[in-house]
Length: 111
Image (cartoon, rainbow, N blue to C red):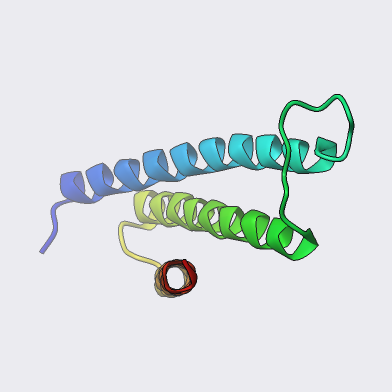
């Protein structure tokens, strides 16, 4: 049995992690998309030498991490409000974790 205090503490940890991931991934996505969009300009100091597929791949991975942060935030809010886990959000988080793990394995295999 979990105590109400332990449930609230876990909820605030999840909310904090979700906000941290969402904020940092949003900033990172803005920076990366800015670099990709300006890489063709002659006076640009940052360049992205990958093709269109690689750009979609990079932004897609960052988007998966962003979605994981959104799921953590939603799960924390649900846990704080109702005092129990949301099975749908838990399955979504596990699915995103599996997707990120598979992408990591593919990238490591191709390297």
